[in-house]
Length: 409
Image (cartoon, rainbow, N blue to C red; front, side, top):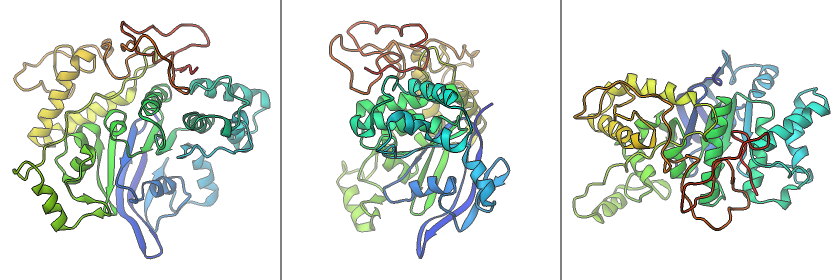
């Protein structure tokens, strides 16, 4: 069974006279990874806190399992919260507790499990995020990346159906961010839980989620499957995903007309912005893990809505799939998974969804990498091998090196 569907309708939140956002309406599809983007200060973290009932919106509804979290009793809200796991920006670990006790805390607080069972669960989750053997360390004795992974292990101990990530890549270098992104995809493949990630990282937004949403000017600008957002010609979405100055977003969120005109004049004289860059392929789960069911569910939704998209977006989606075919991310024949062949191609029968990934595919465990050198202190070296001049080593087998168990030196 996939994770829980979260329906948000007409949500409005203010602090006094300061309106944060209004009339936010979206549905987080069950079992899929969604990302929420937006300029700084647009209320993304406020949205996460509203989802779990830490903040109460003035209007609208948040429905989970037929329960409206905005209007339900406190006792019911307490029960619904047990469906959630949350990874906070800095891990939010207790500084005086070692990692074992930090991760065991929710089990001791919310369950009556014996300590022997708690020990087994904590060991499983620490192994899952690559922290096996670090149980006795204090938060101050480990790196920032390890603290985030400890926070993620704590978020997983109650086997939540919804996991919220508040800027998980904040403060991490690009290498550790890449490892964390792969870990998120692998966890989704194993749990089929519903994930919502708040991030500013463009590469994360382009390669991790099944769905993308964007807050801008106190409203939800767009929300939908990644293919739709990554091919959108909306000026706000295009500017943000390109990471450029030219566009409606300014230093104080919205820029004035004169500034926008000056920046457009700095272009090549055409006054026209280039469109979005080609779609990057979505990360795949590490070899040996279950196939991500979320991908098929999303692709069926996109297929149903393809006829509503602009021709340029349809062509971009088909082209991206054709280009991804050598990496095993589409049919080997180049046919589109959205029910229509690429431009100029005849319809063909779909290939197996389990086609092997190319050595150069993002998320591939056979990716080439340098023969020498060491991995970062908190980087996995087993399920995602280092790059060498030749094909990378295959993950070792055995009970301590099973699928999805990232090993860290």
